[in-house]
Image 1 (cartoon, rainbow, N blue to C red):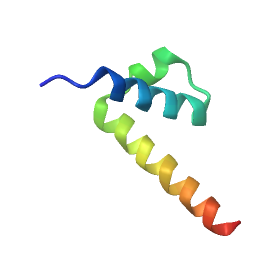
Image 2 (spheres, helix red, strand yellow):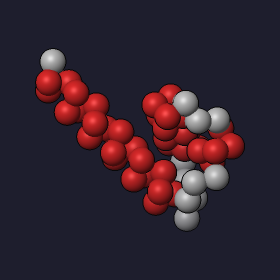
Image 3 (cartoon, rainbow, N blue to C red):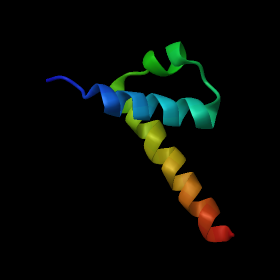
Length: 52
């Protein structure tokens, strides 16, 4: 099974933007770890939006 390149770019950009990590750091993450960070970032962003 292959992973869509566009989806990979989205995930890398999302994690890198929020954590200020470089490309190599994000790409070194295992897929499940990267997905977990994405989930947690989204959860934090939702909570912050609700507090406004």
